[in-house]
Image 1 (cartoon, rainbow, N blue to C red):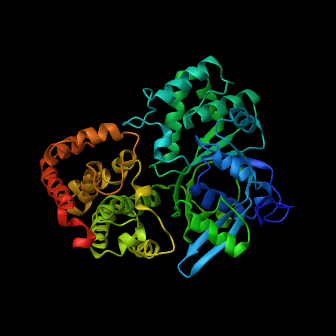
Image 2: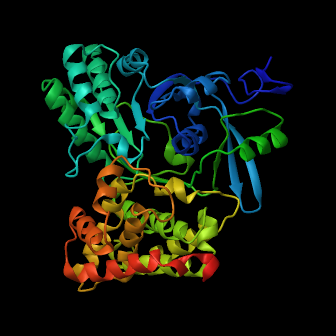
Image 3: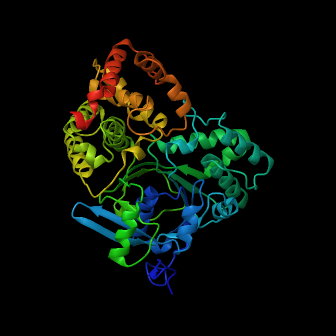
Length: 468
């Protein structure tokens, strides 16, 4: 009998989906993107019956409680341009709140568990500006103290802390190799995770590093699938289409890409048979996506929200925003190490994806955590253009729009460094630009004058779409 809300049934394995597979994958970060991406690829792998996922939430246990009530099942609502296509995903065999460290350690210690995937956003890795683990972060400091005091305790809260707690348990159980597979938009994300984990190990138990070097691989990935936040309209649509009450609906676009490079000492699902690409070097694909998709997303999040738009589809329909996006691509594209025909095709596909009005990808959602995104999306392109002898207005506009955003224009500021950044931009435009460019490592007189003018133009009373 299905669990029910009122007279409408909830999802259950007795009536929907398939039987739960044995857990062989652990996932950290039970959000929409993971459920539209890695969980979807696992569901579609031909050996899915052998690879169940045990997923852990971030700070809030709500998703684990809600998904647990429907046996880990949820509806993926693929919003194509010609209409929605709902699909029940069965790859989550177990769901846990992130605070359940006992369960996490237990999974890590099992010999059959071979893969740990992660989606916690850029900010979740608690990095300092130089890419190392931020030892001054209060939560990191608390994890260090907790792991030193009791490696089997329950007071670990950060992603690096949870990984180290799990790796300690696996070493102690002597259950062999394991792959750690981050899926967040950070360049060379495998090496990035290896670094923050290594930094934490050095503080907690340096003897663990030798075991990690021998038994743990850090896989680098590039991920791509636009996945907005779930709305009540999404839930209502699934109720109408499928006759089930699913509070955990995940809306997404038809397009999906996953590129992976690295070793899997304990094996992995046949993700490549589900459409993933396994390569020796992710970097060219990563750079293409980070600069062309993520960079243009950030540009729209700040510049288009200032013009009064709420979604990506609304933004790209504005001819001024479209022009800015094309100018950004014109600056970034020459530095992407892939054939020009590939880059041109990718740009065309992005316009089609952005124009899909059935995907309500909110600019305010994309605008969050700019302090983590701008240094890796905008700064390398600006520096590459300078290296080619060009001061690119198209590249600089992303930084200018971010500064205007920090000064109170457009989408609300949601950032772990909001106090610092908003302090930098107080006062005149000139002084704010100087401080932010210095913070970004872009203190250059050639850039300053362009950025000051662009911020001034963006903040001008006539800059909104209604008044153009």
